[in-house]
Length: 177
Image (cartoon, rainbow, N blue to C red; front, side, top):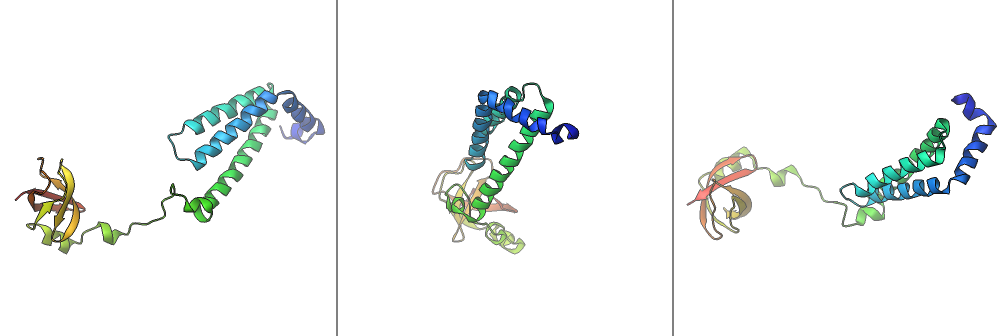
């Protein structure tokens, strides 16, 4: 393959094949646009899958049965998509995209989500009042703190007094008082 690529006839044949196959070139451009959209907009992959299919179809149509030509075209597409991905991810970190509501910029520290062993032990037996219905999970105010809780396998209405019966990590289990 390397001697074929190094000959000057390869590049002229490759360029002529693409000049004759505008449909394949259009499919490749559409595929690259769809893959770029998939990189920017979160979704379930429809744009990325459609873009991949369009790229493959464009490479098949544009290569005209020439494996070296198809591989060279694929290499160009991969390099261009890598450059686009790097630019998008740089923008997501420092640029305009980092200020977008799509990008989560806040961090959750362990101290705000975990109870220490001492705090967990002190919660058991404390009473509180449900702020939402527990079906079986919800929110309760216990010891002056708003906490996510789970009922002991029963439905508990809003504004019902509850007692903490168990704490396992961040899971706080309550029952009716």
